Length: 81
View 1 (cartoon, rainbow, N blue to C red):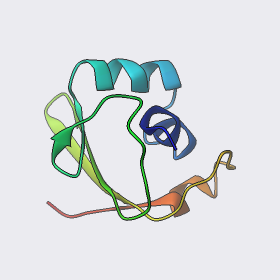
View 2: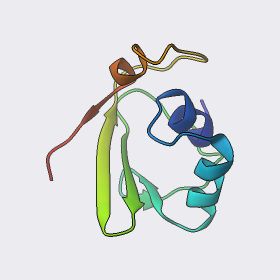
View 3: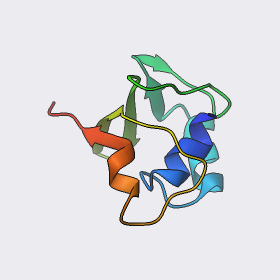
View 4: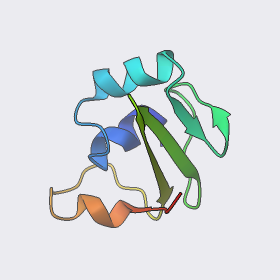
């Protein structure tokens, strides 16, 4: 699954266009490397997103093309820094 689509479906970022923009600006890393929006994400990958002063780090637990709001949090887990 594409990184930008995963970020949207998992609700880590609300809109796919915003996810694309974050990737283009180098604010998203997958497994410690700066990632483009087209990078394929798989279960077990670690995603880091820089939101201003704050960084969110999450591990991919599952992939889904669509999900309900309540189920979105089951696609990833937050990691302590």
